[in-house]
Structures are given as C-alpha cells and as structure tokens.
Length: 149
Image (cartoon, rainbow, N blue to C red; front, side, top):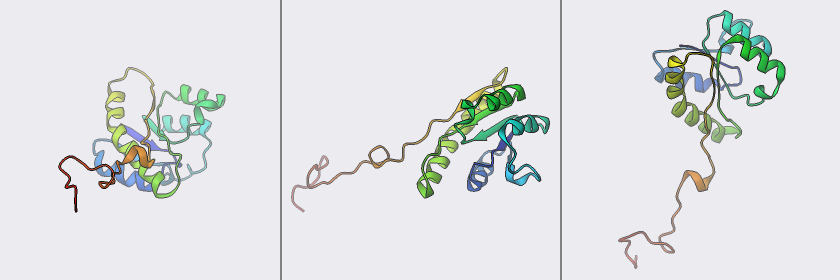
C-alpha cells in the first residue's frame, strides 16, 4: 500500500515506520514539493490523484468538519488517525507506541477491505498509574520478600 503521512505526523515517526513496514511505500507530506500547507479538503483529492491508498493523521477534528468529511469520502482514500494529545517526549512516546502497535494490523485489514475505511488507532495512556506498577516493599512486600533488610 502507498501511505501518506499528514504534515502533523512527527518526522521521527516516519523514520520509525519506514524501518519496520518494509512492504509499504511510506511518504511524509513534507517530502513532496508544493504539498506543505495544503488544506485538508484539497489534500485528499490530491493524494488520491497521486495514487495514495491511505492517509495517516493525528487531526481528530477532521471528522467534525463537513467539507473535510465530504472530501475524505469523495477521495475513496482510507483514513487512519491516532490520538496525540501530549506534548514533548511523552507525546512522541504515545505516538510511536500507538502507531507502531496498531498500524501493521490496520494496514492488513485495509488490504482485505472491499471499500474505503476509516480507522482510529487507540492510544496508549501515558499516566503513571496505567503505564507502571509502583511498589514500596516496606509497605507492600512482594511474595518471598524478606521481612528485615
């Protein structure tokens, strides 16, 4: 499949995807001359005309704007979005984890689909409580933990 990464997709994510998704052509919009700054309602028909099958974006508001939804529908291009609400290193980690874990399966499903599909990859929760278990062995000793250290 030919996959276009929207300009809101971080460039480091492009490098990661091209490292492990070897059977797909992955192009970042910023690499295409004259495409930067293209409005979404123009981007989808342009991408379809250029032979792209999928657009990956983190613009969750696209599906709330009638003209953009109409352009997406008319293009016939598959659309994959992923959440990216956190700034800095945490945000990059969420983006990498979400897309790396979900995109291969999404592309496999799209290869078998008989029409246009819209996919949202579920995000990884970066909060401490959900991403790690924190144990103070003095207060909650694990099984076989010595009682006196």
